Length: 210
Length: 210
DNA sequence: CTTACTGGATAGTGGCAGTATCTAGTCTAG
DNA sequence: CTAGACTAGATACTGCCACTATCCAGTAAG
Image (cartoon, chains in turn blue, orange, red, yellow):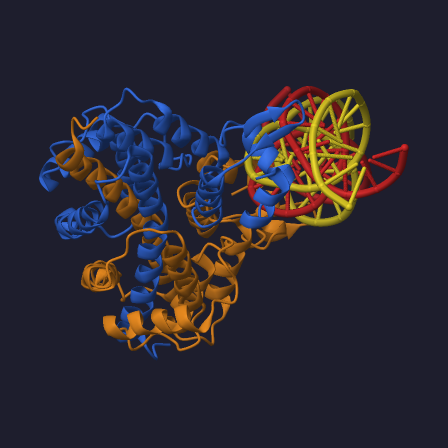
């Protein structure tokens, strides 16, 4: 398949494909001659995946690169690979860096309370959680002390369900793809449902007020 | 309070404050003289809110403007206001526009199945949900037909809990602030917990593989 | 042979979110 | 009363990101 055909079937412009190859998101085509290379179904799949992650999940190109690198490392276990994917997909929005001892302890406590014993003690996501807790505490949002207890079983059920959906009879690249797609697309699905639920419950509580 | 003091207390630069005033995110200070205005606690609160929404939630400036406009409309009920807030916070990532009949019907069916009877029939979020469903169906993600049934009670519980936390004895601006902060910051909280749960469950299923 | 297409390198674009500069008016310390 | 710091508002500029366009010389089909 020539590059223009790849562009046509995926709807991604030739210029963008070249850009992705440059950035290491997509392997170069199999070289047939000096100015001629061949692209196959793998390229189509990969390109479709990249576009969904960017269009739906707004995943930055740098994070896509990290994701690709994670699949490439053949020495890592499937779980290590998934861990790297989680790290890459954590959008690095500028929350207070270097979370203080207190909030970090709260974050660790929440993870322990949830029973998530397999989370790496040095997982970057723990710091991210601590930073978010810091913002919640500082923002004057009414926080009930048992709030976490409400969320944890629900989130645990969602995550367990999503992991169960992954077909583990496939090869690692396909599993990674499902993991990443699930993380991003089902995350958007979840947030969309939550907004709809917010609208419904706000109507129940506040309809007609003022 | 002078503008430099406002900048110092919030950590936002004078130039950025002026930019926010220009964009209509922040009301101009009370004018004392030709080159002198006075800022108060309201400005501090508003500015802190704007920064949290941008830093943690990556809410674009245009959406912040829509949010501000929604609070300003004194004729709308609290529920209408919340509806507009939901619309503004829906990140307009480029998912397939004009969702087809089929996915739109699926989206409506999910809302009905969840029992969210108060959601406006023309709520833009329904189209957003349909678009996401389209992507899920197209992406080759393994989807179990009962998937929605798993999510709905969980999402409903989360949203109901979050709405219950809102202190409805306050004025509409304070309620709006809580609603928006909850939507954005607790949304990040939720996604962070979900990533941690993914890591735990992936370890249970895939540790040591390959 | 001509025309369209190609891989690779390099330079340019558009949008977003600020940031800087300028002007002319105002306040405060000395 | 004046020098220096500060200010509102207008306008222009900047950095970053994700592309997008241009150029080059090689390839291939009609």
